[in-house]
Image (tube, rainbow, N blue to C red):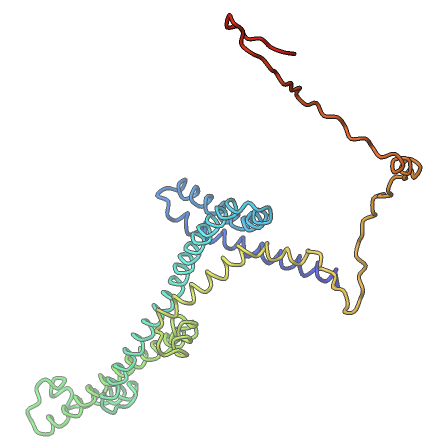
Length: 327
């Protein structure tokens, strides 16, 4: 089980690195196109790649700072991480939008070509339907050649000078064949053009024309009637960009769980012996009972306190006014 977990972890790391490389490539292609010169574009692309790499390793720094109790450092790293994710997300969305517009733009052009071909084909078929009934051009030409061999063809100077009724009737038949020949030639030309338009229509349909320019967006728009095709395109591009940036930002950090050592769970009812440290030696000192008995037999005399000496002084005043003191 452990080896399988490691194998899945390596596969997840490999997939994360692929997505990270794709994210960095999208950022490079989008941001490098914003430079005025080739050198400026390369500088901007290199900066975007460095941002993407730093974004992938920053979650480890945030977790380490939080585990160490350095909340101010973890908060600062979190703000930087949010800014980098936002930058990468905007770059990925710009790349997806430009790439998707190029693909859908080609399909829209083919749809316009198909619409024009179908319109021309419809007009052409209307013209063909208005052409009078006619025979094949070769048959009509044969009849006209036969009439040109007639004596009246020469007498009427190729039907330019028909005065008699029979001559006019002959020339009317010849002119009818001319109109039929013209209709046959025009019908042949229009039929050739119609076949060409049909082949063009088939080729366009084989290349994907006639369908939604954006198949996914069209499906979402039909699935959710309140969302139009442009809104579905925007939602789909945002969804792709969010997935790519989420995996490139948190993929390596999440994959670390495959290599973490799982906690051991103890079964219920198992008695766990608590760890006790050895007690210190608190043996009381030995008691000398003989010394204690002697102390009880001879109570201690109260100590003398030094008190100030006091004396009674008697005296009287003599005749000369001096003080006489008696001892």
